[in-house]
Image (cartoon, rainbow, N blue to C red; front, side, top):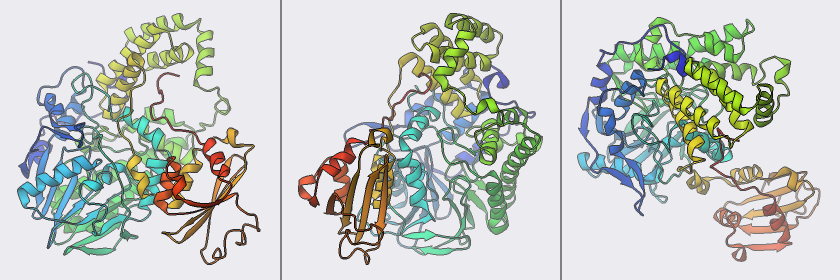
Length: 625
């Protein structure tokens, strides 16, 4: 089998004990019932989750999967309803993440309703089959990632009057990730989650957190109760929640909570049974490993001695005060070590890439299964910490103005005697076991000549061998998705965040629209559009100028007499003024309903704006130019 070093995953000095079955015992503990169907589908019959796709994991580890990753995938494949403690249940294995159900006085409080409405509805139905037809009396989003709120409409209808709790700035950060740069993140997310891979020993075996993502209907609802600080206490349906706000950790808006009456602690996604990401391979704001570590230590101080069980938005619980305190303390040390050692080496002049090769975890952490790099990795986390402090520039002046990948590739390949010569030389590195450098060489060959079939096939085979040795699930998926693109071309991204647009504020809609303006095409265009939203009592002006769309919100008091005389506009009249509602704005931008919207002025201004908007393509190439 390919060695860990050859796979691209840094070798650890210590291997955990494969005879240790404690995680398997905990993953099975509290099992109540399995899924009542073999698959979950949309109303029109499209399968969004297949329970049978993990059956292959019942077997022994093949030589195409790292044994440590196979073990983790077996643990993550458990599916069904589980009892955590009295009054607390979890749905696991119905999606990438867990959905937690906390029983209240009159109903049930849903925590993190998965990615898709179809999977969360199926999970709630299984719970009700076992625990009675309890109504949903509250919803809690632990943080601003779509796998923790996207399935909201499977548990709550749009008109249902239930409290929704979320951390401060939840909507802002949810929109930034899933709408503003949603197209790029979804495409890269398809790579690291292995959405389009076949399920099995040579393909998708998991993501390290769960198996993979569901592909159903996503949505979002804003919070009705915002958690603004650590120590905040809220009671929902008779259940008392003590909150710890943890911004800058696994998500920019995230929170843990303690249930004192249950002696139970929820760590959201801040402490799971894997080394997590400081920077996700799908892209995100770089997280703060120092703050993350401190929040974990704070959780120990606040809630450790008051808890008998710890559960999270992923994986299986940890029972026992001593064991959960040790688990949290090791997780705290894990992020602290990576942060501090990265900075130590950076201050010695090492670059991010160099640091990633040098850092190894201390034996006390490396032998802990929950500190292994199944989802995050020591390598890409060290680079992320370096990036947070020092940015993309490694300090070498030659890095300031490099050619883009295709142009660099052509020049490298020319220096090496052409694509055929590069492929031949890369083949030698493959035969010598240096898969990492073979992949680097072949990347240049493919970008220099994307029609060179031998280069593409050798790179695909190289990626496969790297995948088969990788302990990190997301690295494995990226390698295998790269091989798939090289052989079959770009595959469709099956997940969409379109369902989120209905919950955006007017300001967020305009901000998102601004990111679609094709600057060069808009250079010579000018358009001023005024918007009066009757359902919100809000007034906006959007000005297209100098290739940018600038939205300005005016206070209703200042604009009561109309835009033309409003302070800040210097008496400049708009080209067109619309009087409408927020839902009508969404219809208008989708090319519908113009004849039903009241407007005055030159409608050509709207056509000018629409004419310079780019359409986003969620299926762009990644390993080919």
